[in-house]
Length: 257
Ligand SMILES: *[C@@H]1O[C@H](CO)[C@@H](O)[C@H](O)[C@H]1NC(C)=O
Image (cartoon, rainbow, N blue to C red; front, side, top):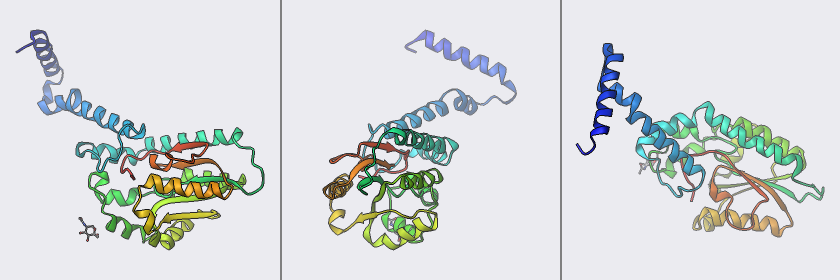
């Protein structure tokens, strides 16, 4: 017993709790309400927050003890509220950002998965980030074209398009998934984009960040002004050329590197 004060504090807490909840006293309940459960929640919340801040990078799996927490978050009204808040900031930006020149060269970029459509139904059945991604199985699911729209993005997508931006979708999906991706997007209400870039064989060999910045370079070379990107992955924003603004949607299930 190194610390008598701490010891008596613990003892008192024990004792008082024991009195108050004497009817159903249990060491496990005590732990859950005052100790282990609470610190696990804090740990997982700060893990998630640091993923979003891009301090934690290239994670392969969600820490095992946080899988239930992440699963709860990604299906919660908080995830929805966080996404909606990000998109409200886009709306605010759009009120003053861009003097569109009407020459058809004003561009806006979107990611696809977990930006326009959701992979949550897949991960719900496949470990929710707690297992390393099995791309065979994920692509098999993608081929079914059953990913639901993220409703808040869908509405904004059309507003951005109606303002006169040319919309480019740049995805880390592979080229063989083109027709399933197009079908899926159209079925849930997306249409009218000017380009959909998927990863060809050469692109698969490079890091996603380099692939995506190369695609942006091609757009800039064609004279496009990239006013904004909406994506759920940090690797969609980094590298040159940059968009004038980037808006990050939450995603703590996987990291695309
Ligand atoms: C990945 O998924 C495929 C198709 O569902 C399955 O056949 C294969 O065994 C899985 N691989 C691993 C390593 O789990």
